[in-house]
Image 1 (cartoon, rainbow, N blue to C red):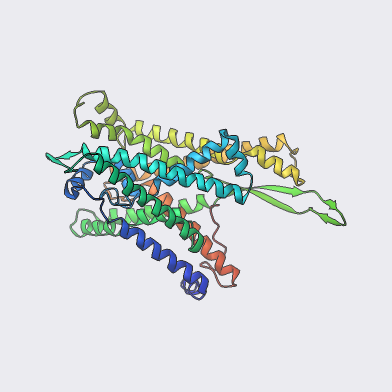
Image 2 (cartoon, rainbow, N blue to C red):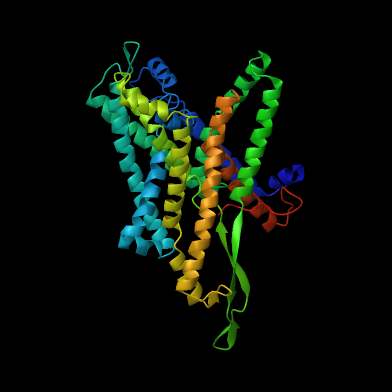
Length: 438
């Protein structure tokens, strides 16, 4: 491992890419502490202390704490991710977008341009909603926005939209000139930013006797086991063997080689946990903004039944994760197109007729893998809740955060290893190679 890290800085291009990436991430973290004008910071901090466990706390984690301080990067990169998902879904129903997706590099650039436009539109809408929500917030009789009105709303919309647009540009620059996927690394940096305070809080509890050494050791073992399980599952593939028939083109003979079609166990990534978690914390968010006026009513009953640790919460979370796993996998992977491309180039699965039979075989295999991946995601998401509830141990990263952190780290290390192997240097591990998730 030490030799592998030393080899990284022996390659000038790779060293420049890594330093460039770190520099832009520092810029991102600095922007997370620049507040939006016109807001009472102390009142806002007290308000966010009371909304832990709601959708605001959920999005605050992805923004690296910028939402809690209502910084210029408060929206984070989530509008860009939402716009990307919307464009991905529209390619199924809009013929023009479907044609662009099949046009290769030029089509991809056009879709990226539409995604940028969608990001700006979503940021303006969310900025308007946040500004109106801030004007209606009062904590202890003190208003979060001392001077409200359309001047404050327009200024907040433009400030937050400019911050998200700048983050989108930062992510693209990291992808092109740095190392790793820029958008993923921005989310990674936002989540990891809470590690120092979490480690300090754990050490304080251990020193004061609030956390026993046995439970602390148990927590470390569980976290290592969970990270190992995520690495194992994210790198897992089901390889479908493919053979290509020999064909003569002119005076040359092509084909005849054997290869395989890798199908990931978790094809949908972290999208199902994000969607499921957002839906599950939505009732608590509504109850928070209701201001407790529905005490003893239906809303409070729903919030109590859907609180983390209850049976209904766990069952609904698993059901939603399974649903979104199948739904998103069906959107991004089309077995019919894969089977048609294989037949076009003379490829076939041994023992399976090309065409419709091959598509049915791939779809059946992918459905089984998706179920396994959805159950694995459900376990990772629910486990921290029960650790906190029953063992009374501080588990500062939710399951979704752990999935993102480990997954992005794997992808980035895989790119670094690709640079090392290309220049004949030793990689991080002496035996085997780190397999990327894509």
